[in-house]
Length: 185
Image 1 (cartoon, rainbow, N blue to C red):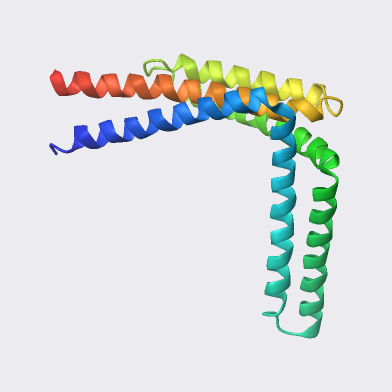
Image 2: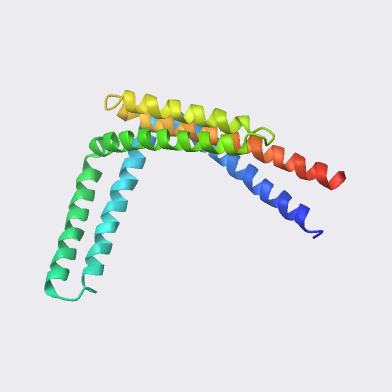
């Protein structure tokens, strides 16, 4: 039981460290929005390509010629689609931008629900602030789509990382203070 405060202090330290990393990554994404957006688009394209390769490998584990052919076709579609997206990152970026906006809207609503469940905790208002900012970012990205796709994904992802990192930092510092107070009181 005597190790519990040390373990909690270590966990809050890791949380503070991850919050600082999120803040730094958010600032980098805001500073380089086009590069960030295209980078994300290319990563997604490569994930699709590797998914296609996985389908090809898995095809040979199937029983029956029909299953093998079907899985091979799915793998080829993945690979061709991934290569197309890798060579057309603007199209990939526009699709990802719309998807990111939708994700932010859902995330903002879910964080609002979390706030109402945790509103009695110290500094829980930061969760509501994060929720409102995330919802606002989602509405901005969906409302400006597709014309803002080239810069929006990097900027909005950066702002989201910055806000989430700042929220995590504030909550982690509050938790650390509460642990310290409980240990001394």
